Structure formats: C-alpha cells, structure tokens
Length: 174
Image (cartoon, rainbow, N blue to C red; front, side, top):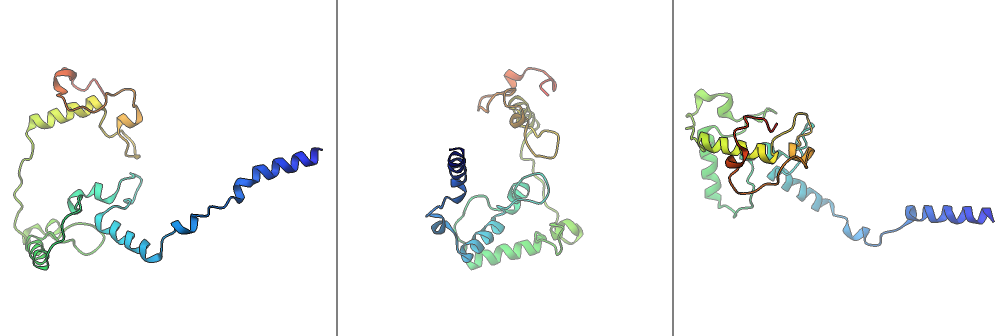
C-alpha cells in the first residue's frame, strides 16, 4: 500500500514537468522577425544600457532617440538633416565614446546657443514636488526612486501646487 501511495504522489508531483503546451510552437518567432525586432530596438534605443543601473539607452540619451513614432521622411528631408548635422558637428565620432564631433572638437564647429528652458522658481517648484512625492533617486546603484523603496512615506503624484503644502522645511523631508 505504501508503494502505491508513493508512486501516485511521485507521479502527481512530476506531472507539471511533463506538461506540454500545444500553442508553444505557434508562438515562436522566425529568425527574420527576431532580427527585425533587434534592428528596431537598436534604432529606437529600446535596449538595456550596460552597467547596473537598469535603464534603457533611450532613457539615458533621450536627445538621440525619437520617443514617438513619427511620419516617414522624404529623401530630401533626410539629406537636409544630414547636411545640417555635418555642418554643426552633431555626428557621432568614431569609436565607442558616444561623443559627437562638436563635443570632441568644439573649435571646428559653431557654438550652440544655450537657452534657459525653466526659471529658477520653476526648478524650485519641481524640486519641492519631487521631495513631496519621493520622486528622487535613492542612493545606491539600483536606480530606484525613494517612493519605490519607501512607498508608504510619500504621497502619490498630483497636479496641484506642492509649495503651499510643503512649508519651509529646507530639506527636512529627506
């Protein structure tokens, strides 16, 4: 009797290991589909960056990747953009540095005009809101934010002004 029970228990516990998914073969991709997906990911930067931060390449270098799918461009538009990039030095330099030509040799290209995109008060307001909601990077190498590590300590994001609610703490929320 014990042998029968043991065999039944072993058979039931091993059954999931031998389970077969009939749809498994239908879900697999062809080599060409995988290559096309890889090419798309490389083009859009939708691949994991090297290192331990856990971010995608398009998140780290957002200026180099178009985030929203756009309309196709004509040949003349692409050539015009290429000529402008060559003139301004916005072409990637050879090698693995990821730097542009105008970053490596700024004396050969016209200087870029810097424009202030936000006022000091706007930046202070954003900082106050980030402190209030925990939307700040935590110390360490995992790349998580404070509200991800300590979800109970921070209020959820909202659109209202935080400056009136945050008071004059001068960093006491940290």
